[in-house]
Length: 30
Length: 173
Image (cartoon, rainbow over all chains, first blue to last red; front, side, top):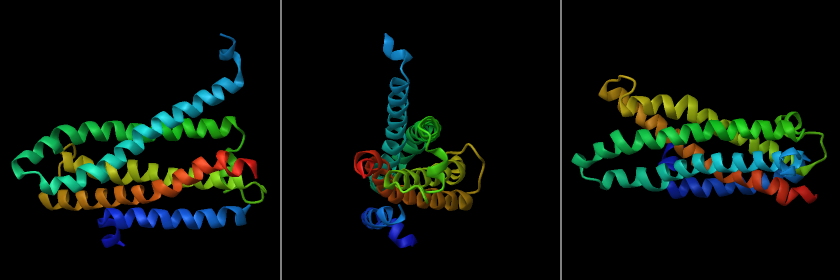
């Protein structure tokens, strides 16, 4: 986890992955 | 000047204030992560104190108070729009994707706010010398503050998705 966070671009990529997960679960949760 | 008496005007005004404070906050967050942190190793050692003693304390001031005002305006906004409690429980049972989305945005934003006030700022106080600390403690504080700052950069992307898509996409669903 720390090595991911130490890399700015890996951090941003992880942010986009979380965004995709959110886009999938928001309609399901409602 | 009738608009001062309109509830809709104050609703939009609060949203505008929330976004302005949010730009102040996330703008500084991204400055730290995109500009300052990657550049520090390239700065000659004798010039680094200029950043740590002069630029960093000023940037941290606008950063943490931007975070505080964003949270305060955001909570008032959610309360005024009658979705605060629904959003806190992530819109479960509301049948509204908009409420679920704003709920996620609020929770991610609240976690980021807590990171600022309970992890980044107390540790940065050691780095800039407001709180006394040994060199080892300063190094450890720099690491914790840096990691919390990176976590917030990571969370800022889905947080802004949830905030922006709630009214502009899910709003119509």
